Image (cartoon, rainbow over all chains, first blue to last red; front, top):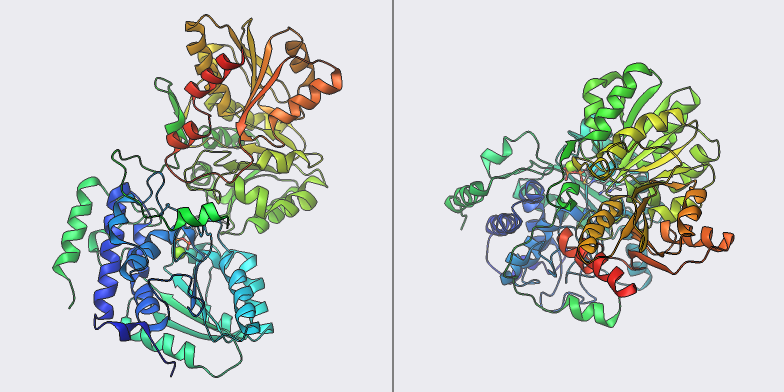
Length: 283
Length: 342
Ligand SMILES: Cc1ncc(C[n+]2csc(CCOP(=O)(O)OP(=O)(O)O)c2C)c(N)n1
Ligand SMILES: [Mg+2]
């Protein structure tokens, strides 16, 4: 088993961490009155397991060389990562109400030059996995044992650049690369399965030479097991965890919305969503 | 990363007192008081498609955000959702053009110009195929930062032979460009104004009609000539009103076709001895300003020349009105600059 995990530092449950990420994302959404809140609610469990079970990092030193790298390929998910970075103590909680504001460190689209803990500049989709390949090569060349995590979306499976990187990672036997696909079956124009992501997903990655798992991305136990399996696999190959998530997870009246890519939330609905969440605070 | 950028990244912030939301909406750019038209591109495409069965629509997961959904609803059988794959969008459009269709392909300006450039260059432009590339968020029309701000799209595309380049000002331009693009037998790149688009030009020139390849005087003026394209023509006209109150008479020459440039009209107007100011929603490098400067120098026409454009830099993220003020694209900044140059 891999040693040190972040959750050893705290006895707070992963469920409580995921809850905290959802809550902070909603608070940020309320600041702007808009945002990619559906994605943040959907991917909160994946981020909780990444930051509080799997990854090594030092909150007080976001650029600590021994950290596992976490690349947010999907810049529009920044609101979700900010929430996780605040939960992890990398960003201060009192900056929540600067989200998306002029001169904020938390712009709507994630950028490395703005935010501690943001490893790369996203926004133009389909970049993360290629950069992850380079980082994994670099870390290996330096003799490091860090993992490179790349969080990408199902929409990014449409970009050719993704598949160039998929093949390259196999070619170079990048066992220190873990790709996480947030499969929410949503893109800008509608369901991903109606665009380019016609399944089956895991067999596709396996055929490309990857260690591939497909899990319920809103099930913390399943996620924890999948991250452990990905880290512990002895094969000289890259690993992918395809996480089937639900947009707006945890806030039923938002989950039911048809258009969730840029979910419309009316001014009075933020408080309603926060109340629903607060009633379900885990221990 | 520079030391200054790093310092900024690690400096804690506090929330500003006034709340300004980051916006991706083009309509928020219009000054108060202009009427708006909803989805002029989408509706014009539907109208053109009614009488021309060669027209098809393609997008890379941005139909809703480029007004192509209007066409997709009207003609679902002539609409192709290519998924988020901009290179494929261009290659497939080229393929359809080979088979006699006139594809209208939509995405954002950054993704067409940056990711798909080679595919546009070789599959479309080199073969002079009639693919019409219609792209949202041109120049600085979103607060999302450099990933979405197409500040160098004109520079990139001006170097491409065969390609016609359009930069509309308003709803009239946008709608009338569609049949003009269909009539033009070759590839076109058009900057898109989407959603609720202001009607600007006909207010100042009631009989205004878009003409491909033609620059047109929208307003005459004896002290200054502003040569502008895109939404900067709207800004120039607004600034001209402000300056008129100070007794400064500003003419505005609107250049919606960036390539091929209407050098004849530009030279005619430039020769009248006024201060010449170019204004563009684009980097100071490689856009309208440089195209006009080149045209003047080649002809030996040398009025005093000034350029209003975005700096040669990656721009900030933030609220759009803040950014326009910061980079001098707002009406007040333009008027102030012109006063200073007189
Ligand atoms: C290269 C590129 N093309 C298009 C876009 C515009 N865009 C932003 S998000 C998005 C949808 C992508 O799918 P996904 O990330 O799965 O969407 P979500 O799950 O967030 O709804 C698109 C097309 C982009 N940011 N980058
Ligand atoms: Mg998705």
